[in-house]
Length: 289
Length: 210
Image (tube, rainbow over all chains, first blue to last red; front, side):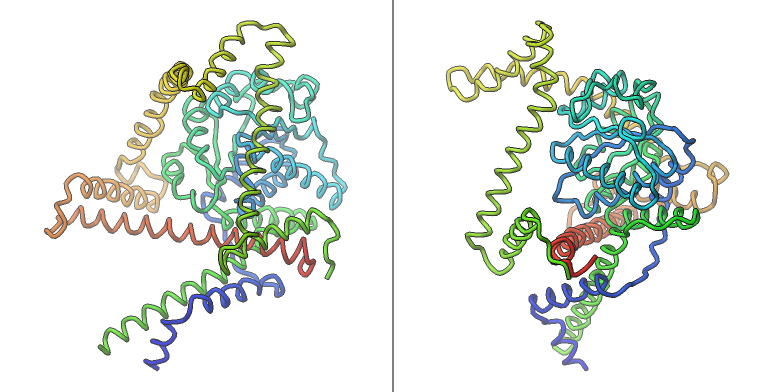
């Protein structure tokens, strides 16, 4: 047994990679159910949107790029599904160049899914608007607090903002119930300083797992109302939205984040196993001299 | 199994495999994909910034609406190009001075308020009756001990090799837990990105999974 553990602790790196890949592929072919109970920071975002009255407006800033798409896009889609089913209107903007088209794609995909699955029309200009990219993030965030029209006089496709019915009574943060930044950058820092700090607008952050720990202190201090961290957070939010849809007797959307998170869970279990085997082998070898 | 018939999906799959080929060893295909990515990203940024910022924020107000005060920021912006000439490089200091001065003026009071005052306030420990539940009080107490012990570790921790007092030692434990949490999140993030590409290759490209 001792020799076996020592041998296992010296497993080749390529073998470890191979086992991980095989393990990660399992959830794509076998249905697995891991319990993704929503963590309090994710649940806080869900509850906040859930408790908003119909017709409220939220602003979603798409601040990510394609390199983090598997983590961030499911978050955005889950939030949009939640908002649209609650008749909450959404303003989309992007403060990173790369996020501009990705954000538009997510809005359009969710609108198409609503039509295909429930025959519900999510209308551009009435249920959502997409204002596109603005450079100079600090100035843009501050400007939104004064007058959205000055920062975004036109929408993404060049249409005058005055021609969009949804924007008639929306001037600045006072008319917005929640700002959510879905980000793979340090932009949430600017949202905290300039939007929450200066104007006191409620703020939530959806971010990659790498950056999630950076924003926890702001959660504890109450400067942000909630935090969706990484693919795990996205899977939790997707789970909550699916639960809501199930309660309302609706068919469910695709569960992209949950399926991908199943694969990550298996990989992480394997990594924990390898760490244990490596340590046992190391100590047994050391003990044996 | 429904293999994609879209040229773009095939192209994206080829580029993904090109990047993964680095796992075997460095090769010309990988270097081509890497260069292509850098070039496309830069080009894309130029187009987006031109269409979404330069034209609506400067070109249209200045040349369409005749808003002449916009000449000032335009000239300041053009000064950045002076760095291409040794003779006129000093001109770049002017827009930089505006940027740094304005940025610091904007950020300092608000950043101090949000990152220092609010954070210090939220670290205060009150009597248990102040909190909604016992759990909330325990959370606050852990945060209080963590912050104080880590500060003590950084400011009053003795040199390596000598005995540390109890609080700085506790600070080290908090730091290690923090690093562990960050590392755990990082592993999860990297795996998530890998899964994203595998999902694309097996789903969108090969059609093996839905």
